Image (cartoon, rainbow, N blue to C red):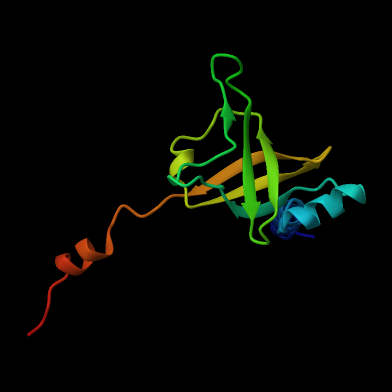
Length: 142
């Protein structure tokens, strides 16, 4: 076998290995109910949960617990998923900037002892563009 053929086979094998490794780490989107069921079955793989922060009458989020002077790597909050199930979430890292302003939150992690432990938090913040400003900024053709 030629050296070039052997090199091509090694490169193909490495590519297949990389694809298999990343596919095995892929997580799925679930509700808190499904995350609890997976944890009860002993499945500790990472899952994504999409939700919103519960708000009071003044539109301020409720259930946030963060004290950076006491422990800067402990952030706890309540999240309501798409099925309207509220769940306590613990994040062992500093609170993300502008967390209170987010419209939607996507967390990655798994359930442990009736608490969702998040490894990653992705925030969807409101757009800085207002609909009226966008309409006024576009050119009109008469």
